[in-house]
Image (cartoon, rainbow, N blue to C red; front, side, top):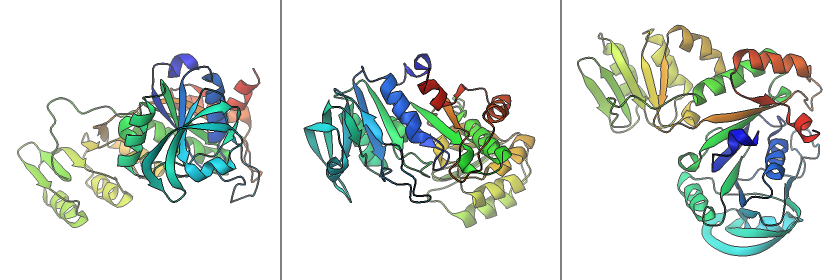
Length: 326
């Protein structure tokens, strides 16, 4: 696995849902890179001792001497690792200022980082002064990484906790992979404004996002649309308008893959219309870990789950629990 991740400096780890194995994946990666100058932080807080849904003990984040962490100052009271303060930043959270510290004794940590784009980017820039690689723990259900401009790649943890139906989990994972495979637009494409519709003979833009403007403009056009640019989130309502147009071979451009907030059930329609998805800031999906176990008891057969994912996804997939034991 190291050969896949080695060339990426800042990697985000995100789970498809709670209990899909995100923290287990993070701990595996930490152990794998424990002898490097490794940094750790989190988007927001995802460090409760007990899972608030099923009240089962959550896996703790284990750190080793020499690693550098960035977390809210009060989180140190809930950590068993010994942390030597390197820098108390001016970045504030509800749990106090964010500190950057170096681990001097092995133990567990609770991570709580910034939640805004600007502050997370500032923090990652500061951390890069101390380390050669950073793992960013993506809090549950934060599919939109606030730190996207500073991340080089993503690791996804998928599993049975997402749905009792394995087909549903595979479909969601496949949609995630599809969106994160998006590339940059061609060099002759130029976007402007907050919303833009480009046809063969005209360009229509608006400087602020307006659903009404987008709906009226889209429905009034009678010529072929070459591409659409939407700044920020691509919501289901916006995607409905695009797909209702039923125009094949059109391109949708968005800022980055995390802005696609559309249900995975639309994957078939997107593919049938050959709707191309481009992003201004690509971020590759590097690795997928799978967890066939669910705390609800609706677990999957491990081999069936692996082969169902492998049949539709061309990315390395591993059961990280098995990797831990090899």
